[in-house]
Every structure is written in structure tokens, then in C-alpha cells.
Length: 238
Image (cartoon, rainbow, N blue to C red; front, side, top):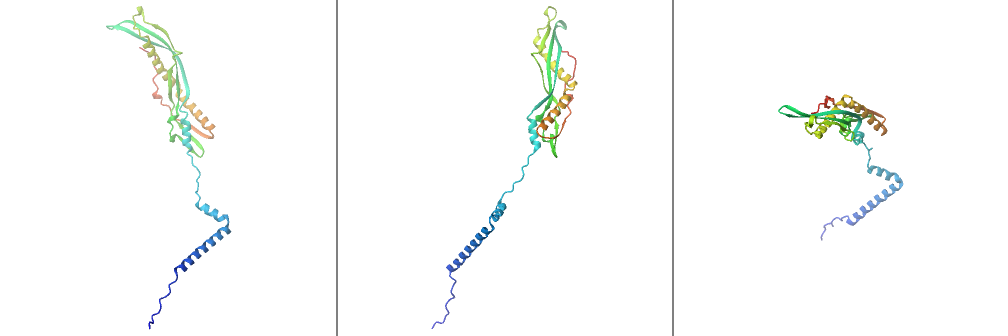
């Protein structure tokens, strides 16, 4: 007779799966009841946890001011006008002997414009400190100079005795106009047109920024380079 005891009975796998499903379903029921009881507060807290935090936008005011000032480009703040009679002459010589001289008197009218080139502004030239705007403008320069040909004219033209002087009227007129232009720039610098341009540029830029809503504005201008101006001399065109 076989007396070997029967093997131990294994716990059915299906019964284990049933217990697991029952536990999971119980967890879902408890979670649902908890959410229902807590109302929208839990949803709000979860939403806050996953929400993005937005920082305040930062704007570099100095760069905005630079672009605004640069848009004004070349700011003409002083104009120097001048009318003068310019003599010009040229001789004809043979073997060192002058046969005749051509003389021309040219009544020239021109203008010299001075100001600051705002396109040269850099980030170092515009500072914003505690609501105060500090701007250092570039040095004032001669922006433009020209002879008004419509208001200028040849006053007198002579080739001398028997018209032996060279027929160089157009050349003398062009030479007289160029020398007049150089002398006008020199005279304008001597009369302080660059200093005036700097002072008026400060007022203009300050008014521009004040109208834009900036209450505290401090404007300074770099000193002009007077050595760049031509030297004022007497007319001696040849």
C-alpha cells in the first residue's frame, strides 16, 4: 500500500488575478470619491503644478532709443551762408615774357551745413539709469557744402590787351568756385558754426526724447575737431 502524502495544493492563479483586479478597482473607487469630495480645489492644485511660470518681459530701452535717434540720420542744426566776389586769373607766357592775362571776377553764393551724424551712435553713447536718459552725441561736423550755381555768376571776364590772355573762362570759373567753397568752410568754422551745431543738436535731441515721454534727459556733445577745417586764406586763384 502506497502511503506517500499528496502534493501541496497550489493557490489558483485565477483567484490571485481576481484579488488583484478587486484591489485595483477598489483603488479607483477611493480615488474617484476623493476627487469628488475635494471638488475643483484638487484640480486647481494639479493645474498649478503643471502650469508654466511666465516672467515679466524685459526691454532694453537704450537700444530702442538708439534706433529712434539713428532714424533721424544726419541732423543739420546750423547753416552758414556766404556771398563773396572771387578773383581768378591766368597768364600766357612765351620765353618767360607775359603776353596777356585773363582775369575773371566770380560772384559766388554758397552754404555750409553743420550738424551731428546720429547714425554713429553706439550703445555706449546712450545710457539709462534709474529712469534718467543720458546721451552723448557725436562731435558736430560739416555735413554738406555747396555753391548755389543759380545765385552765383561771372561778374567780369577779360583777356587783357588785344585778348592775348588764354581763353580759359570755364576753367577759371570752376577753380574760383572750388576755392570759394574751401574758404566758406574755413570761414564757417572760424565763426563757430560747429559749436553752434553742437548746442542746437543737444536741444533738438532733448526735445525729441522729452516728447517721447522721457522726463529726465541729459544730453552732451563731443567737442568738434576744428583741425579738420581748412585754413582761411586770401583768395589767390590762378
